[in-house]
Image (cartoon, rainbow, N blue to C red; front, top):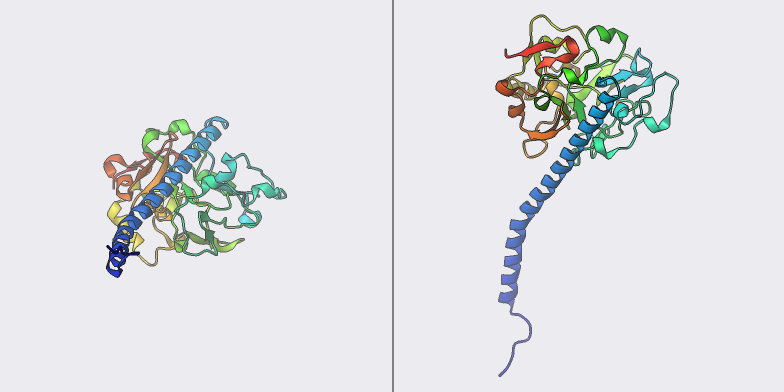
Length: 307
């Protein structure tokens, strides 16, 4: 009896077909597994930032840092001191201080492995560059932004009448109030300009979930508008996101600074009690369980009300 050597063409084609089918099935699964792993790594970073902020508050009479301050207390010509520098022990004041280790410092904690900017001149894989990479005391890649009701802008002395450093203990429901969120990966949303620094990506600015008087307040930059600080409505937020003119300094809602759908339609958040969790944008804006703050603690503790 003669025995065949090797495989027939039909058998080879059958094997190739089976392998191609298996590859088609497995590749999406592997892609989802990698995405899930990156989302978990981001969530771990959010937890670490929560620990940093709780420790920083404990060491500073219970007060949280500002989102940023100008190093010379006047303008951004000497750069700024960002909260990422404060919570990692790099805070230094004085216009003449040029300690290299503080400027655009390296840290994986402030990176999101799923962050890819739409303009690599202003950012990199992991996060946005500082507005002034050669001056700012800030993580060199920043994928996270603070909630201004807890951590407002305190750029210069005149800001103090519009915002104050917040005692963490003032949070009414710390387990239900967002402290840190993920930044948008869209450059146009966080572009801005200043008299001394010119145009650039403002990767130090805080976000907030405020309408009403909160729109004029701009996270502590100016006096609140007339009326109440109001919760943002989900439908209004989505409509604003679709508005092509909603960019940079012209944003009505500073919640557009956040990247709310980075992880399969969800995003990771650090809360005022230090824990971190994943939510959809709609969940965070639910008026029955509004996660962007019960009060504007940085502006006299005014209540955030349903419009």
